Image (tube, rainbow, N blue to C red; front, side, top):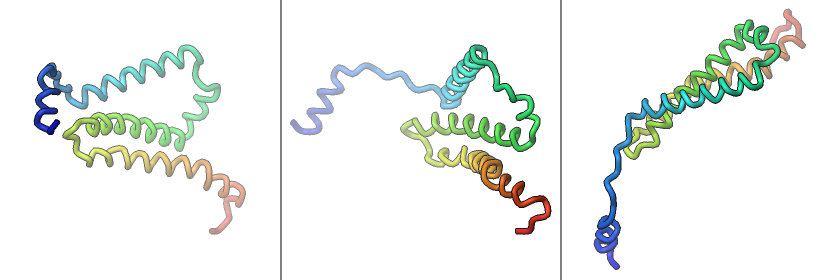
Length: 124
């Protein structure tokens, strides 16, 4: 069987395909479902016991903001990249907040304990 016969045979009984909606609609739907799931989890389990104290710290606010922004922009990028005509440049959209998030977590986990151990007057 040659290629033309195969294509003819496969397309003889093919049903029309519904076009995909805009990527932003899919991303917003996915983000809405995710927010509902998170709200349900918080309703069942509650917040962390120290959430108020943690969110009072500026670096925790920045890390949370960068994490949320990374997730939202990654959702939009994923729905653009999943299309056959998706531009690969969308891959870079969540990279800046992701870098800020990783840098913030690294600062909180790695460097800050070193600063505290060395004391305020330590010189590097």
